[in-house]
Length: 285
Image 1 (cartoon, rainbow, N blue to C red):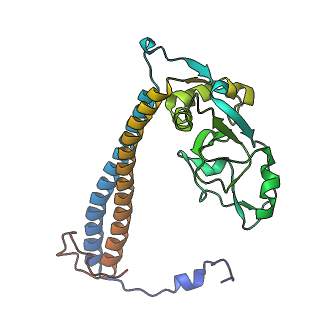
Image 2: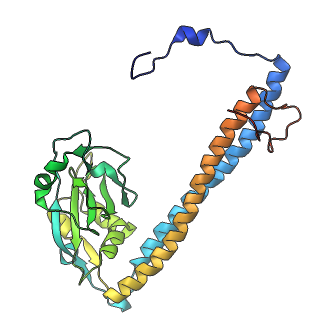
């Protein structure tokens, strides 16, 4: 074994000692686990399907928020009319450190938020001001990835981050368009389709700054936009809550499966009389 990496020792593994029940008992254990894990797999499959349906529901809600009839007389204007500041950090690669100010690149922006767990990179704290000379962040700025991948969106809630690589900042003209309207529109199927329509590239799609500025965005009156966003946020919050419950359910299923298998093969209960219900209560793993 090294100091930092655990190595596989084939000889030790080959000489491990463990109890081996007779063949008939092995078959009973296997049959019991086949039946019980099949039940868990079915529940898990239903959970994944429900998650997919909820994602479709969310997509439909967002699409509806930005859909207007011709009778509504809602203008569709280029994005440059809704954005007052463009801060472009594409192509920028700073010197990185082991700690300091978190560095956000395109791989940290996903599912509508900044995910610092996706990639942990930093720049020195005393280098922050100089590095961010293209423009400091403000709360509610919108981050958009312009390639690899194209079209991931997040809103800035904490400005103590640095930016680099394939990220552009959009600051909304709030007398024309709220940051929330801009955020949700760029995440919507309609906004994503407009980005894709203007993208170029054979292996990795990207969008040039001038084409991004021309992306159309529907701009209703601020009061109408606020009303629609309020309705959207309420319903999306309900969908997100259900999705989180399903994630927790699948985690419990995984733990249940692991505990059940361990308890069965180590003889912590008798599979010939067990029903699969509560058989792991009080067992150790």
